[in-house]
Length: 162
Image (cartoon, rainbow, N blue to C red):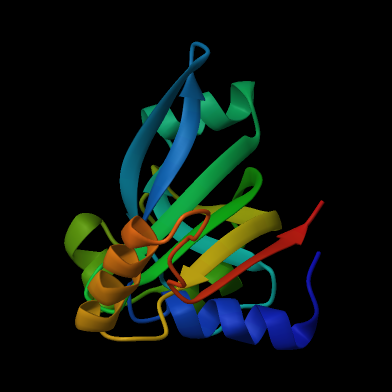
């Protein structure tokens, strides 16, 4: 688990990326697909709309453990989050997170019987954030190649959870 401050840090890193790759187990093989965030804040749980009939739903019923990865190469942000997935049909939550983007994918609306929310409770993760420009990063890589036993300083890296 992480502190409220750390949750805000994670949210600051992923909120503008919006799309994360959800990794599930498909018959013991990892499988990833893009998922679009629908929330405006993060408290340790991530929310995504999905179809109840989607393969990812069947995969998470077999194995609740999932991983989500977010990346923004331009800003040097990389986030990996691991947690457990479940479905949530709470109409208040569906109303809260409903938006025009979601409506485009679900033309039958909020009452579509195939519509559900995937709730992912995050247990652990890791993030990387480059603190400097690409030019500086290239300098750090070149410097590390010339010095023995040196590694480039590419910025911040932090693990949390288990």
